Amino acid sequence: MSAEATSTDTTPTESTETSVDAAVVDGPLERLRAAFPDNESIAHSIDLVTMEVEACDLLAVAEKVKTDPALSYRQMSDLCGVDYGTYGQGEWSTDSTVTGGYGRAVESSSSIGRLIFDTAIDLPKRDRPRFVVVIHLLSIEHNARLRIRCAAPDDELPVVPSITGIWNNADWYEREAFDLFGILFDGHDDLRRILTDYGFVGHPFRKDFPLIGNVEMRYDPVKGRVVYEPVSIEPRVLVPRVVREDARYQSGAAPDDKARREKDS
Image 1 (tube, rainbow, N blue to C red):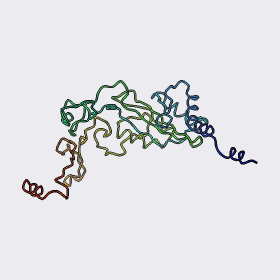
Image 2 (cartoon, helix red, strand yellow):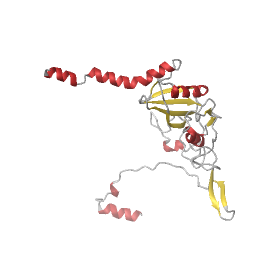
Image 3 (cartoon, rainbow, N blue to C red):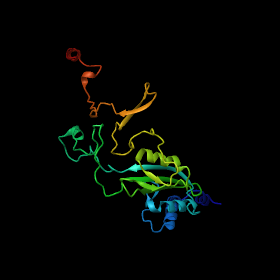
Image 4 (cartoon, helix red, strand yellow):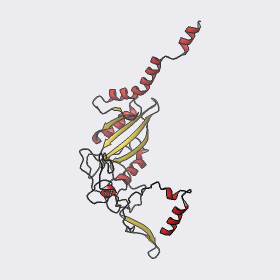
């Protein structure tokens, strides 16, 4: 066999590498589109196949992606909640020079990024659901991952179906999403708090939750039990500290500068 033939047989061509990469990337995407032809949301998002699912269809979709041999997403690796209450809002992003400085985050008229942490913020009105449940799945058979996003239709009482009947390890994940975001999972057998205390008021990962919370707890030796009381932290404004370069604080500063600093102090 000639050296040229040997080189041709052993060296992968660019077209072969491209076809292999395309198969790895597009395989799960095409299989999902074939399984759900009416779902136009199936697409790549940050190197992961993602699909949007209505709450009323979540259980049927979850059952199919797990049991369909062409999909076989048998392992649920993560479930979490997302609060889009302030999504896309930037308190400090400005296109022009402003005169308000950090003060605009202290004024009560500011609805996003207020630095007074004893009060909640007023959320802007949006044309999209506020709470979304995100589920990450793994297919070991096909070496593929899938992200399912399911939005709760009601912002005031966010409810989505529980998937514990399909992936039983979703139990604690759903309890965590309920605890931190207040998302209810219809059909969950034991939906109670898992990270915060049972007497905790509110859901700490919501965008409108006060940074100092609503109540604090301590052990009362007189009553012999834990008691809940209003928060005793003194409200204050959290303005970021600005650090400036100053030659006076360098080790090689002139002697007269050091004397002036000592005199001023």
